[in-house]
Length: 107
Image (tube, rainbow, N blue to C red; front, side, top):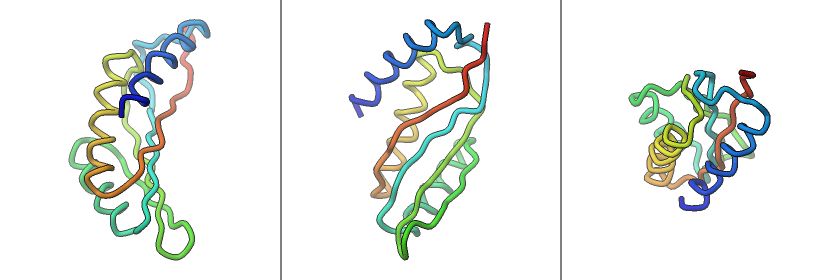
């Protein structure tokens, strides 16, 4: 998880350079991969209880990719909190958290 938290600081710096209004809410996407699609569905259901919208897509026969979204700002504190939350649920369901992304909102 530490790698993802370090990336949040780097992404914040890049967004400031792009004049992103990091305090403006926007749809933030998080992605994770699972060896078993049932685990992806379980993680999605757990994250929906935390206010995320979840979509699971089948990869190959048994694998799944989870995409969850939530309206949020992208300041470092919020990004860290979301990464910790999503990462925790994903790993508890035997998934591999891939990271997050969000559009730039010009200030």
